Structure formats: C-alpha cells, structure tokens
Length: 361
Image 1 (cartoon, one colour):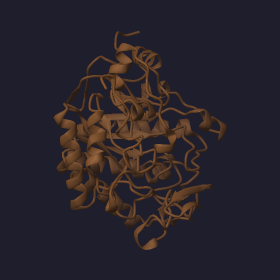
Image 2 (image 1 turned 180 degrees about the vertical axis):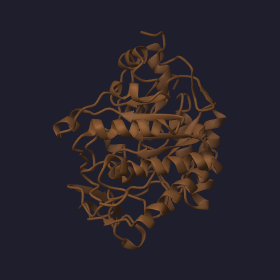
Image 3 (image 1 turned 90 degrees about the vertical axis):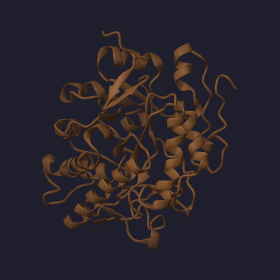
Image 4 (image 1 turned 30 degrees about the vertical axis):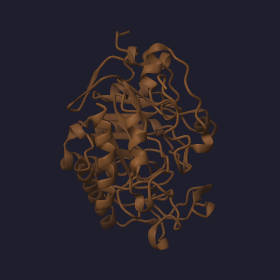
C-alpha cells in the first residue's frame, strides 16, 4: 500500500491538481435557450472549484448531437461566450475545469433535435425503454445508421468542439465515451452490428473512439484530453457479449495515444441486475500506465483504499459533489454531508443547484 490518499496533490497532463477529489460530470439541464451557459451555471461550478478537477456536464458538439432539453453546447459563438463566464469564475477561485463533450447518438429523440430529424447511430437498432423529452417520456426512436462519410464528419466536429472549449477557457476536454451515447454505441456489439471498417471485430468497433481521441489530441494536445468509459454500464440499454475483452482492447489502444487521463466508471447494483459483468477498475490498471480516474459510489474510505492499492490515481465524486459544494473540505475533516434532492437534479432554477450550504454558511 502506498501513502497516496485523496488529498495528495497530483499531476494530470501539464496541470498540478491540489487534491484527488474530482467532480464527476453530471447533467443538470440548466442552460438557457440554444444551449447557452448562463450566470447561474458559472456560480454552480465556481462553488465547487475546490475539486482537484471539475469535469463539466456533457456538452453537445453539434445541434444534432443533443438528447435532453436545456443541456449546453459548444458549437456556437453564443455558447462559447457563455462558457467563458464559467471558466473565468472557476479560475478566479483557483480551480481547474475540463469540458465533457458528447454526441448522444441513438440515445435521443426527434423531439430533441432541431427540425425533428431522426437520431443517428452505428446501426439502425433502437434502445429499449423510454427517454425524457419536452413532451414527456417517449419510446426511443430507431436511429439511422451513419455512413462512413458522416462518421468522418462527426470526428471533425469533436475536434472543433475541443478547439472551441480551449477558446472558451477550459483547461481541457473529456470525451464522453460512456453511458450508451454515440462513442459507447460504436464500441459495443449490442448496438453496433455494422459490417464495414467500423463494425464486427473489436478492432473495428474501437476504431471510432480511437479516431476521435486522435483528432482531439491533434486539435488541443494530449495533455488536454481525457476519455471516459463505462465498461459495466447498462444505461440506455447497453450490452456487450464480452465486455472484458472489448474494453480491455479499448483501454490498451487508448493508452498508446497517451491522453492526460482515462476515466472509468465502475458498475453498480442496477447494472448487475440488468446482466452486466461488473468489472472493477483494478482490472484495467495493468492495461493503462497513465493517469487512471474512477468513480461510482465512492466514500473517502473506499477512495483512499483504491488509491493506496494503486488501482486508480484519483476518484471522481458525483451526487455527493452535487449536494456539497465544499466536498473536499467535508471529506478532509469528516463533516456530515448535505443530502441531495433527486427532485431537483434536472429541474430549472436555483433550488437544488446553487443553494446547498457549505460548512461556513
């Protein structure tokens, strides 16, 4: 066991982080019309600037890559200007912040996409279940399978989104390759049944995530690029016939690109109930020699145990950071934590967003 714990400083890319208590990306649906970040979002993230690194909510790279109402984008001048207020507010508090970028793929609905167009994916396979839209819950739509030319265009959109993020003042970007959205859909054989160079073998199914990561690194540098994966996740009806082999290959392939970090979400009880192979982050540690971040229901004790064992280099906290803007301090002194209110997770307005008290309040 090493002496590393949650409060040991660390290096990520070219950045020295004050601690290893990171803020995980969480959709909050508070953006203004047109996906423009606002002053309330700037306050929300600035309140949490004591995190070693903030990873923002997922942010669409194009108008057609959207899933939920009031999520932010990073493809228009207005969105870039809105995010500048956020990054400035975080930097003024001494924080570091990466923008998580996504394309939602089949996990969308025509009601969410401008012009009511059909969602896209690697194959024309609809996810089972329902999705929340402006008209309430509706069944997932069957996506249109992307052409190879369109795949290349989306790779370019990811690269441009990364450049826009740096223009907006972000310290880097995290590629959302998890939770059943487009990148994850290409990786897994439950959603990808293509027969061209982007489907079939694990090498082909991994091609998209590798090409997008290469494009991001070319656009902004490896020290500004992280990638998130959810090998055990079943959200959005995701499955794979051999997740350990699939994601073992993906992790090694990404490791060859030397990104700033890899962020792997561990499975939960719900994933296991839906048939997932719950793969611990320790499985991937020998396959990746860079900075490895994990998350998934961690406490201080569980976090310190994993860091001390060398299973991961940092821990990302989700709902506990949502309800506790000063989470690092609370973990450090063992203070009680505020209880998150699920009714306000995706609501509008400040309640349950910027009104959780800090210890000094």
